Image (cartoon, rainbow, N blue to C red; front, top):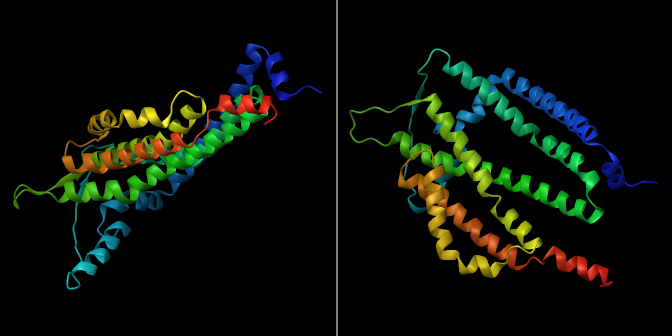
Amino acid sequence: MESGAEQARKMSFWDHLEVLRAYILRIVLVCLAFGIAAFCLKAWLFDILLAPGRDSFVTYRLLERAGRLFSPDAGPVRFQVDLIGTGLTQQFMIHMKAAFGFGFFCAFPYVLYCLFRFVSPALYAQERRYAVRLVGLGYLMFVLGVLLSYFLVFPLAFRFLGTYQVDGSVANLISLQSYMNTFLVLSLMLGCVFEIPVLAWLFAKMGLLNGGVLKKYRRYAVVAILVVAAVITPTSDVFTLMLVSLPMWLLYELGIIVACRTRPFRLQRGEEAQGV
């Protein structure tokens, strides 16, 4: 009986395209279903997206409780930042983009599953096991990065910048477009930054990287992290720059630990061939 890998090799180019087309169609339909559901649940969707801009958000409440440990007489800190729409169609378009962006995020595990199903017939059993680990760990780290942005980085940046005034007579009116752009960019960038340990594991497994190299270039990496953080942050203030660059540096250090403890895949295959 032929294995999946042998069957995949016998398929023509057009057969592969037909399979890929079927998977893409499924992905589009699932993303549309989640997007339409999110669009219909507008109040619930924007309660989630706009929550970091309100002083009742869980992060601010936890910071208040932590502050009372050092100053028991300190009262609650209240702030208000008004969001405004600056175009006739802006709120509707932001609603559309937010709904389908949120739908894609919810459907992303299924997207990864479809992509894995497409390439898995061409992989050997051992390669499939590593691919499953890589995809699963990569998605988990991306979600952790998004959650860090949602619960810590974006709320602190928004509270600092949204309430900062050069003079009491100058009011802050933040556009909804600016709020959503900053929210999206920070979430996406931190999600991608959290892939650093996963990439370190992958390259170390392939024998292309080791912990010694990462340690050797640590000083240069710090400079590169600051440059990258300055580029990817949607605002130009030092406060947000530090909020983004600190997790990047910690993840780089985690990548060093992961690379040091990972044995190259080629060595393991050699050991298995010798019956170790």
